[in-house]
Each structure stands twice: as structure tokens, then as C-alpha cells.
Figure 1 (cartoon, rainbow, N blue to C red):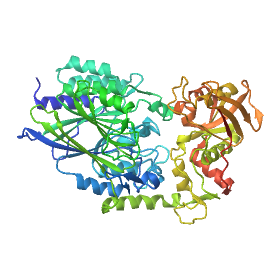
Figure 2 (figure 1 turned 60 degrees about the horizontal axis):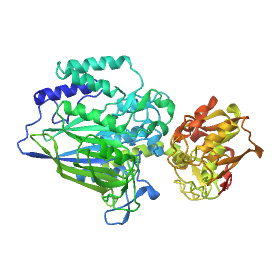
Figure 3 (figure 1 turned 30 degrees about the vertical axis):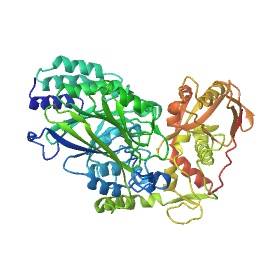
Figure 4 (figure 1 turned 90 degrees about the vertical axis):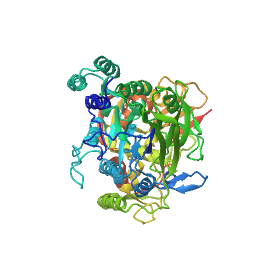
Length: 605
């Protein structure tokens, strides 16, 4: 058996082979961890998930949370998170996260490709995080830049200067390259050499079983003389919910399979205290205490119950819910399965003991608590100053008026599934792509319409229907390109059929695409899949199966996002402006906009 020092050296070599150095805390760097004398030592984890760049306190329902007493309270905001973390931290604390820390962010962060949010997370001491699907919004190469540093290839450096990279490790054990690269062979040789010939066959087997890592699968942090291993996972549905071009070289394999291989890697070098950080979760019964286990078992529960019994707890994300559950592992043991809401409104605190002799978590000692990030505490002054500095930088852009509305423009769905704001966005995309792209209709995915435009909602305080760029960006924060593809009438009908469950595309739930005002059709709620959609008309003229139609949509949809796979059959792709720029241009061309009536889709039994 290897000594503990050799085990740690071996792990450092193995992890370096996949682009990850074994991190240590400053106090432990350059020296051997102190030998524990107690039978067990304490460890505290503080975790966040789905922060989505909410440096300022989120507003509306996104800024409220039901607390442990059943009261709905205001929650979230970077300066309040920092205060709560300081109050909850002790000398045994590690801070971690479960993905979607960036992406779909407010303009304050998104204007600078979320560098402000990543810097904030480093400031508060996050040490490791799973990647989420939104970390891939701008593609794998941009995620790599965020991880390791450098200025944006198009927009250049932010006002803060050259980006230095994240201070924490992003992990993705189930994210691999589709094909070997020159670096992968070199990585295996380095790993075998670092192990000094020990466990060579085992390591080779693991590398072969795992694939070619695109991201570090694991990291290890030492606390009170014992190693804690973290495994990062992201939902394997990521290819269907991000733009395909940015991840074309990647494969997202089954989370359970990847976690089990990563667990073996940790165990191989003596790390038995293992925590999964997974960006996948479940829904809950509404308005429950954040400490309740009111989950409806789904994709998150499958992972939590099926990953290797060596894994001691599963901290999750993605579904934006708060819950604390105990689930059974494959050997009948009990382990924690938790999530902490979203937007920085909840911090999950997990206390446990690690046995000094076995170096494993004492499962019976695990105590978890979801702490609501209330705004009744004093905001952290350093973080308040930090956020204000970025607000000052972005203010000229955010507060610039782009047009007016005559009433609230809501994204609430009518009975047909369309909304006034969704229809308006589609109209703007059609207008932006008629010249150059020869678009005839436009379709917008409902999940991309993230907020309502309120008549009295301007942050500049006009209260007279003025819409600012910042408000428009809140509605569409993804920076997608508007593209145009050619579809036949039959292919367009298939796209519309793919709005509904029951088809071969495995649509999880009905998602009604938002049509431009010149496109109408009918769907039947009672008809079988494939026969639901009829009576397609463009500018009042019937659509035939054989005619060709130029359809505008964002590149997320064109790439088959949200399970609209028939879009990928389109030909003659033309790329136009960013979606937010098309939206702003539509306001410029129509200075006073009345909300369109969501009556383009007729619904029959």
C-alpha cells in the first residue's frame, strides 16, 4: 500500500494529467498536512447553486424566498451573501457550488461576459464548482477563457483589465471530447509517470473507461488533515439546451457512469470522503420550507440514489428548488441529497465528521441546513463597493432609453401558449432578418423570454413607459444570434409538432414557440402527435408541404435546442444580428409599441 504522502503525489499526477493540479489551502501549501490526533475531525461545507450572475439583489419573485418559518422574505444579493457566508464560516469551512453561476445573467455581469460574477465568487472563497449548462452558453472556448484567463477575443478586456481567470476549479466529470487529441496521449503518459509505476494498470483502465476529459473531473481539498474529494457533474441534457456550435466537439455522458469512474479515481489514491456537486435536480411541492424534502423524484433523484455507494453526499442544482433529503445509496446506506434554490437566495450548510483512521465521512454525523440569505443583515462593505464599481461602469449602457411601450408587455402565456412579449420579440427578429436573410416568418422559444417589460419599470425612474437597454437585456440575456434557415412546409409543420409531448424528440413538456404576427396556425389538444398542427398561413396564404419558407429563429433553436430537432433539417443558414440588438432595433424603428394581442394560434379540442 502507498503511504499517504505517495497517495497524494499520485493523485496530483493523475489529476494534472487531465489539466487539474491538486489544490491546497494557503496554510497547507508547501508542507505536509498536520497529522490529526482526534478520532474524527469536523468539516463544514457552504454551497451555492444557480447564481446566474445576480450581483445585485434579484427583484420580483426571483428575489423572494419562503423561510423555515413559512414566511416569504426578501433574499439574495452579493453583499448579503458575503455577510451570511462570513457568519456561517468557521475554521473548518470549504465553500463550493453546483453550477450555473454564470449565464442568463443581468446586464451588470453579462455585459462583461460574467467576469464580475466569477471574480465575486473568488472573493467570497468558493473553491470548487460543477459546471452548469449555462456555463456553456458562449461555448467551450469561452468557458476555458473564464477558467484560465485572457481577454475576450471579440470584445477585448473589460474596464478592470486583463482577465486573470477563476479562483476556483470548474469540474465536469461527464464532459468529454468526442475524439482523441494530441494532448490526450501526452496526458496519460504524464499520469503514469507521476504514479511511479504503481497502480499503472488500474490508472490505464480508468482513463480508458472514462474517455478524454474536457474538464477536470475531480478536485481534492484538505481540511483538518484529511482529504475531501469533489466530483463535478452537469446535466446530460446540456446539448439540447445550449447552442450546439459552441459544444460541437463535446459529449455529455451519463452522470452516474461518470461519477462512478471519478469515484474510483479518488478511491485509487486514498480519497474516501467524496462529495458530488451535480448540476441536475428535481422539482418540489411549492411553498415548502427550504429544509423540507418535498421533491418529486426525477433526474436528480436518479443520480443521488444510483451513484457509487462510496460517494457520501450529493449537492445539486439546475431545478432552482430548495430541499434537504436523505436518500439510499446502492448498498442501502443513507446519504444527503440537497439543493439551495437559485439566484443566491439560499446557502446550504452541511456539517459532518471525517474518521481520521478511515478518512471517510461518518454518515450519521451529517447535519444539513438551508439558510435563507436574508437582507436584514448588514451588507458586506467590500462587496458592496465591488458591485457599485461595476454598476458605475455599466450604467451608461444600462440606462440608455431604446423606446416606449403603451402598457405592460408581459411574458405570461395566453391559453394558446403565446405571449404578447414573445410575439413582439418574434416580430423584431423577423424585421431584422428580412433584408439579407430573406426571412418570411420568425419563431421564438418561450424559455428565452426571461422577464416582463413593465410600463412603470424603468430604472431611470421615468414611469412613462420608457424601456431602457438594461430592461431589454433582462428580457433576452443570452446574446444569441438571429439566424434564418430554409424549411419546407412539411418540415415547418414538424417543428410545430415538436412543441408537444409524445413524439420521438422526447419533448419533456409542451413548449409553444412564439410566432411573428404574420404567421398563424391551429393546433388540437386532443389529436395524436403528428396530427396536432394544421391550417398554417403566412400573411393569410396557406402553407403547402412542398413550398420553401425562410424561417428566422435564434441560433439556439436553429441548432435543435429545446428538442426542436427538425430545425436541424434546415438549409442555407444565414446569420444576422444578436437577438438583443434585433430587439433594440425594433424599438428604434417603432418608438411607441402597443402590446400585440396573442391571438396568432387557434386552439381546438
